[in-house]
Length: 234
Image 1: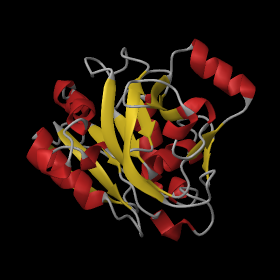
Image 2: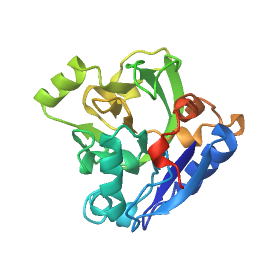
Image 3: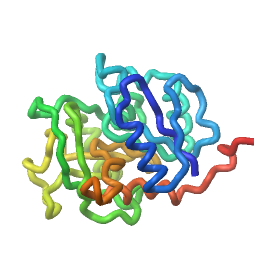
Image 4: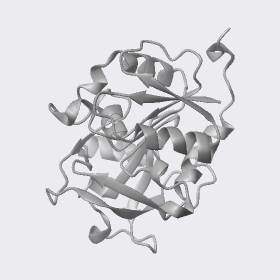
């Protein structure tokens, strides 16, 4: 199993992702620079958090136009597992692999703390066998997920909402929603279930020393992904 960890100018969670994958999930992981054009030899992609291109235009907008994202979109449509955390979620929305957008937090303040997530879809690649309630940290200023009513209805009907912000007891509550996301949405999957975007950082919840190991439940999905013959380097 070999995972590509993308790097853009301004990425700041790429090292967290790399070492979480290598040391805690125990899969092979390597950096891939944004100017690369191929993901040949890789079996999955992690798009990390950070401030890609300084978020100067719109969070994730510039990164979504990078050369490597053309390969990510192509491979995602072919079934390759792709996960984007925080800025990675924003990039997935900007590139069109997931619907909606991420806007400035309703509080207009940067938020950095642990949150509780309720698993809403346990049928996707990323959520099979995951416990109902997870505790995972967030760190973002623009994490408010928005979409129109038609899109929200489609996400609900297609069971594509992966996680919602909830209380420790698993209840929906405005206080538990750290950024004002519509329907308390914290993460989504695509129609095929192989692409996951979420604002919380599972790569920062892989050791007891960090306060939680709940992120491992999401990332360990990579251990179950079969290596595709067409990805092998000759």
